[in-house]
Image (cartoon, rainbow, N blue to C red; front, side, top):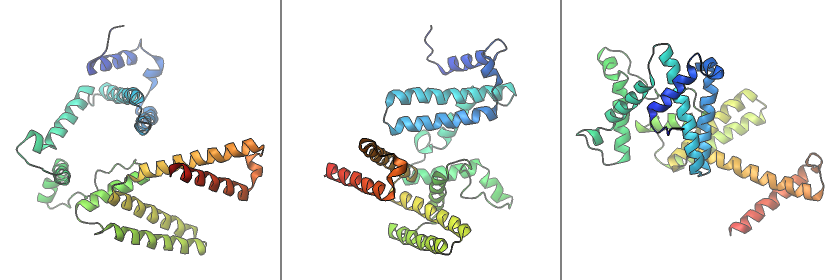
Length: 272
């Protein structure tokens, strides 16, 4: 089989799959049917990054690229655009948004790069024309995808707001707000108000995401770390019960909690 090492080769392969004599399954796919596959491939790329597995990363990036080419082929069939337009579009956008690299502008810090990026983006979205015509300017929060996971969206929204000065002066202020939201959540729970509890839980999580942003900690990554830690500890509890011949459903909370604390204590001893 001939080596395929150009983007055009992948596009040609996709064209072949969608031809009448191509693959029945590929010919049946639509924008809607590919949406789930696209999300799955994105998460598999993230999983490869989390596992620090370069071989898996190479494979998953290929799978993700294939979805980009597949969606571009559907757009070509309806006369909207072709894959080459996608490549050209992103190259032109990155050139425009890096005038300190490809032009005469200067940016010495990452913060200055981000400020310029947002201003250029605002102009691209017609911000100058809207202001000149008297229309309300586009929101500072515009551009945050609606389909982002909620915790990641909280981080992105607060980041955009912080870039225009809407932020706590210090990390301590965010911690105080976190305690305030916790007390409001506790009050709602004690009152048995599920609607208020839902709202206050959301406020607590949003504030926690803000604290992560201020600390330079990705809240999505931090939560995933907590998920992994919980799963690993629970697996050790299950293993201990299996060795003792006790079905987990019959262990009871007291025994489960004791084993959990033993697992945590063993981890602390190992780390020290």
